[in-house]
Length: 111
Image (cartoon, rainbow, N blue to C red):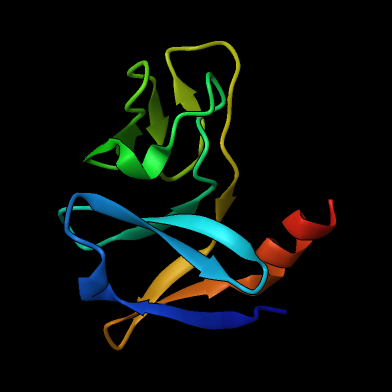
């Protein structure tokens, strides 16, 4: 069962940018592409724990600000590396509001 929670207005996240939001189930980085798609990921690069929300969003990817690792916003996979993945969470826009599936956030908190 999907449990969508309203976390922010779409305009609170700049195009080709990100914001870290706090929910009762933990913090998550919200990314917005130039095409107004939204993605939710953990805010930690698997390489050296760089803050991904401080990275550069390009297309459907983000580049970590510490060592330029490129991470897919869609899958969380690190591009060009044999290992490394960031957890992703279902996100969508409805009526100009960003919604997250809290079920996935809660599962992370329990693990």
